[in-house]
Image (cartoon, rainbow over all chains, first blue to last red; front, top):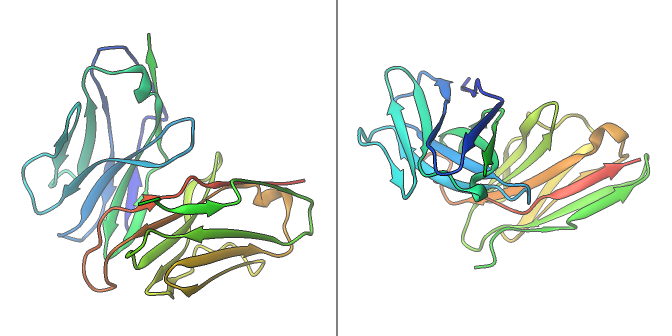
Length: 112
Length: 117
């Protein structure tokens, strides 16, 4: 079975600073997908970024980037130039053959 | 595209009553997922359909829970009888893919906040 671990239940960052959220996973699979989802107070789950395991290059979406370390089974999310609107719960997710496995989430607060 | 549509957005009911949550996936998506989110247990997958067929319902907590997908554009999650511990936010999500091939990201609906008193 696949497991996803987010070891930081809560984090905070000053506006305009950079923050990194950690995620590790356990799998015996070689090909899979990893995702970060954001859930703001509105509760809507929003896809932030996606990484294919077969790609060595780290995915980047504007201020969001990942550090994907396949051998270490690590998939951290870096948010640069943090904005107040980044305040949310962030979920790391592993996907293989349509099955998604989510971490328990990290609550991020951006402090003005 | 309107995205994944869920109704109702909020539901308050008394213990013992039947509750039906509804979901309309994104047109063209063939996989549908029901999740339950609580503070204690986080986000839990309840059931997963592919091409209207339930693939994995191992997350359904007990026989009081049932889910159907009569066609590609509609699914229901029913709780009968409801209990206070069922209070949670229930999400529906959809994606495109096949059972044997890879699928891509899931798109979530806005959720239904269920309160059972």
